[in-house]
Image: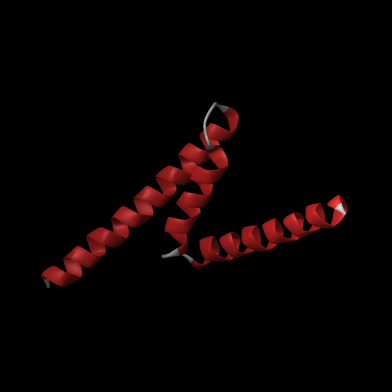
Length: 76
């Protein structure tokens, strides 16, 4: 019983922390601050619980790799 409650509290904490970081990151895009890394950190926490966040993180990684490859190819 107690183990189940601890797991539920941990899950709620991760979800709240993830959404809080995501919101702060979005605010930091328009104000001074490291918006993009905070958004990625929030999505990383949410990806542990939600499939939509995991898919979004995978897409960001894929597009980031594609962009990096395009930049490196244009340097040559």
